[in-house]
Length: 324
Image (cartoon, rainbow, N blue to C red):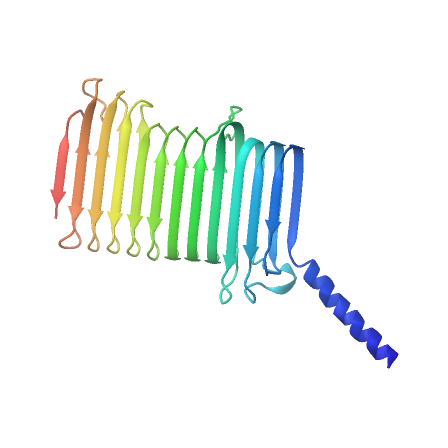
C-alpha cells in the first residue's frame, strides 16, 4: 500500500515539475534602472528572451498559448518573444495569444538602439497562429544612435508577416493585418516619416520604403491578392505623400516619388475597387524651379476591371487624373 502511494506521489511531483518548467523566460540586464516584466499567462509553452544594456529601458511581455496549440516539451513553442534594447529610453510591449486550433504559434522580434533624447517605442499584439513580427529601431552599423521611433504592429489571424526597419529619427510606422496570409514590409531610413498599413483580406502584399524625410504613406487593402509598392526618396527638404486604397482583388499599385529639388511637394493617390487593375505613378521632379511647387497624380479605377494606368511626372506643377 505504501509503495503504491509513493509511486503516485512521485508521478504527481513529476507532473508539477513539468508544468513549472514548461514556460521558458530569460532576462539579462546590464546597467541601471531597467524594468522587465514577463507574464506567460495560462500557457505552458511560451518562450521569452530579454536583453537590456544601458539604462532606463522597459519591456513587458504577456503570452498565452491557449492549449492545445503547442506541442509538449517545447518541440514547437506556442509563442516566442525576443527583445534586445541597447542605450536608454526604449520601451517594448509584446502581447501574444495563440489559437487553440492552430499551430505553430506567433513569433515577435524587437531590437532597439536608442540614445534617449526621445523615447523609442515598439508595441506588438498578435493573436492567432504562425504570425511573425520583426521591428528594428535605431542604428545598424552606423555608430550614431537614434531616438524617437514609434512602431505598432497588430496582427489577428493566420500566417501574417510584418517587418519594420526604422533607422532615422522620429519615424512612425503602424501595421494592422487581419484574416490570412498578408505581408507588410516598411523601411524608414530618413527622418520624420509616417507609414500606415491596413490589410484585412487574404494574401495582400505591401512594401513602403522611405529614405528621405517628411514622407507620408498610407496603404489600405481589403480585397485579396493585392500588391502595393511605395518608394519615397530624394531631397530631405521635400514633402511627399502616397495613398493607396485597394478593395478589389488581384490589383497592383506602384508609386515612386523621387524629389531631388528642395521644397518640392508630390502627391499620389490610387483607388482600385474592382479586380485585376494595374496602376503605376512615377514622380521625378528633377527639373523645375527650386521653390515650392507641387505634382499631383490621381488614379481611380472603380467601374470596370483589368484597367491599366501609367503616369509619369517630371518637372513642376503637374496634375494628372485618371478615372476608369
